[in-house]
Every structure is written in C-alpha cells, then in structure tokens.
Image (cartoon, rainbow, N blue to C red; front, top):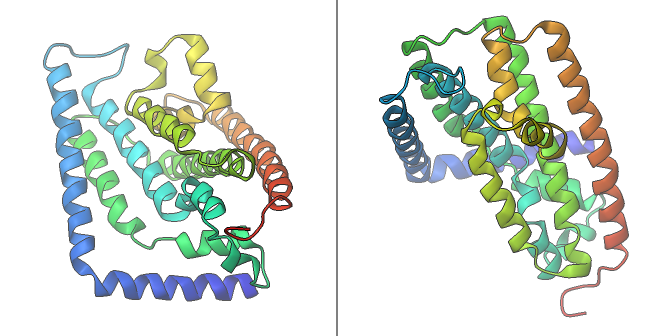
Length: 263
C-alpha cells in the first residue's frame, strides 16, 4: 500500500509538471507528427515500386509501425529508468534512494515514470488510422489482446536493460552497450518475417523485437490463431521470469559493491 501511495504521489507531481510546461507537450506532439511523416514517406516511397514485401502490404506495415510506436509509449513512460541506471550508479545518484525505507530500484522507477504516455500514444493512433485507410484489417478483440503482448515485451526489454546497466557496478559506463540497443530498435521498423529464420528466432527468444510489433500485428489481422498467440504470451511470461531473476541477481550482487559517490 505504501508503494501505491508513493506511486500516486509521483503521478501527481508529473501531472503538475506536464501542466506547467505545456509547450513541452506540444513539442512532443509535433515531433511525433514529424516521425509519422518521415516513416510514411519512407515506406510510401518503397511501396511506390511494389505492392507487397514478402507478403506485407503498405497498410499492414503501417500497423507494424503503430504497434512499435505503442511499445515506445510504454517503454519511455514506464520503463525508461532502465536506460540510465549506469549514470545513477557511477555518479552517486543512488545515494538518495538507498536512504529511503523502500527498494531503491522501485523508488527510482517511480521517480522516472512519465505521464506523457498519452502524448506518445498519439503516434500509435495516427499510424493505426493510416493503416485502416490503406485497407489493413483489424479485429478489435484481437487488438486488445495484442496490446497486452506489447506491454509485456516492454517489460522484458526493461529487465534486459536493468541487468546490463547493473554491470556498471563492475565496469562503469555502459553507454556503448545501451547504444547497441538503440541501433537494434531500428530493426523494429520492419516485420521480422522478412528476415531469415535464424534472425527471427533471435528476435523472439533473445531480444524480444517480434513481440513488440510483428506478432501483435499478425494477431490483430487474424493471421495467428488464438492457441499460437497464447503460447507466445506464455513465452513472454517465461522470458519476464528469467530476466527478472537475472536482473535481480546482478543488481543485488552489484549493490554490495556500491559505495557513496567519491567513496
């Protein structure tokens, strides 16, 4: 219950900040519009030369873009803390969380939570609207289930980053490793089924790119049956459990090595 009250308190602070700096919210919407325009221009140029890419139409690829934008909304609003943990460890920012009577990782996660998820979901809505205009099909019930899959994928990704960022207790700066993940995100613009089978397996069981956009899109279009979709959800839950154990182990081991900044 204490965690819930603390989370709600941070929520109020974030909402007040968002209301105070309305220009920042508007700029976020404008950057989303620019991102949508560039993505639409890129894929529109490609599809001006072909009708499909390995079976994917223009509208279906826009669905993929929509689910990836949804993943980014979840990750940057809820799990963004995982990307900057190495700086928290190296520069002593962890000190102020260790003196609080709660799990320092949870406290840091609450502090980094951003309520501008609604602004980030703007891109998702526009991409889905474009997809429907281009003839892509969407089943509402399947779409609702696909949202759960996207959310779970963002949690997996966050746990992977927590595990990697916790290595900063031993290694120091992890910027180069995090930069690799930023590059990996570029692959998420493409349906994974256009890649070789080996790459598809890696993108499913290694870095969960397939769960971010391709599988949710296929299920929404009713190109995956319910049984297979539920198996994928079970795989996601197993990956969350595995990476939670790894991240917790590395974090706890590293925390024993931590000393105050300069100490």
